[in-house]
Length: 442
Image (cartoon, rainbow, N blue to C red; front, top):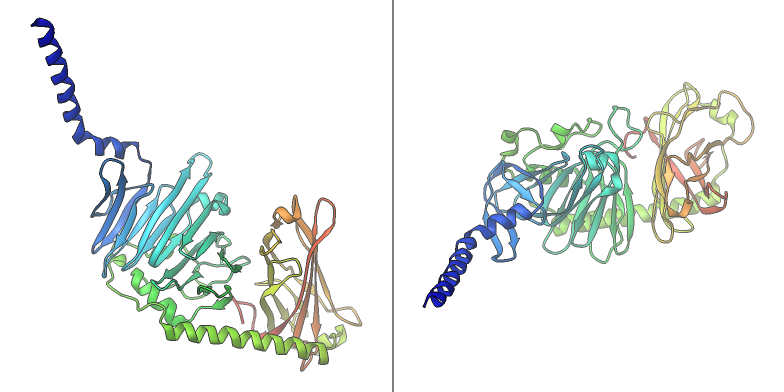
């Protein structure tokens, strides 16, 4: 009897202990999960779904100031929006009918090193980079259903629609800006290629079955998305401070604007414009081959005044990848370069190297015969597997008399491996001339 009673007591004790532990399982599971950040500026219906091994997906209303854990899936209602502020000061903002999850977050506050990865599966979004991307930009990426955004600084925005279309744009200043802001840019990759976006207000349309192409985003599209996020977009050239980029205070974030998004008509309009630009580029290249003659130094000096710039983007290179360039010319001071002048190289195809380099000022106050301006690539500015320890090479710019003196500027690019000086890529294109200094595009 005594033995049986003892055994019965032990069984009951074990059962009671097990039952008393059941309510603690969710708390223990939450304690074991990794916190990535906190919620902020919550407006409207925001539902958080966290996966719990014992209970499956759990949805609940989110309040400002709550902890956000790795893997939490956040959904917003029809008139809702919020911010997710990560511990490294990265900020994501979503608008109505949107969905985001923090997939990866590793951060060492002592060094700033880490990894940030988030998935946006639908809706409108904006991101402002924190310390992880400041230390190592390639350590942050944003995953969309049919594309990936690699981040190189400042802030960006975009939209994902139910039919699989969308867009991504750069909201902060690009490289070579004169506002003292950190250089920014994004690389958008789909199954059909990669484009580098380095200019504020530019972006790419994401359409299944179509390769990405860099375009200037229509102002009405940008305005609708930022209205849904509860703030107005900064005008071109405005420094992208973190407070402005993040949408300002919580009261500013409480705006109830909504966006109609990318309509089918707008997709068709942008697609038609891209095709139009491609046709114009092809026609220009043919005309250049037939009528172009290199401008001489004497002809450059014959133009007494005026400030212009040359700009060309998405130029295919022989071994994959693309490049773009902008070059200022000042006939009054008889100089080229400086200001917003820059060269940008992007990876693609079998070519893996990228970077940006400002094009310094050169004078044409002297010299005779065919004019050209030579720049050496700085291997500290360009890097990638195709270049080993870094890329060097040359970028030669030659003004062309296509329809008038110095109406075009041909850029001849040679990229070499700095370790063995072998040529790894080449490219050439002629950029048209536009009025005024370079300021983010044509």
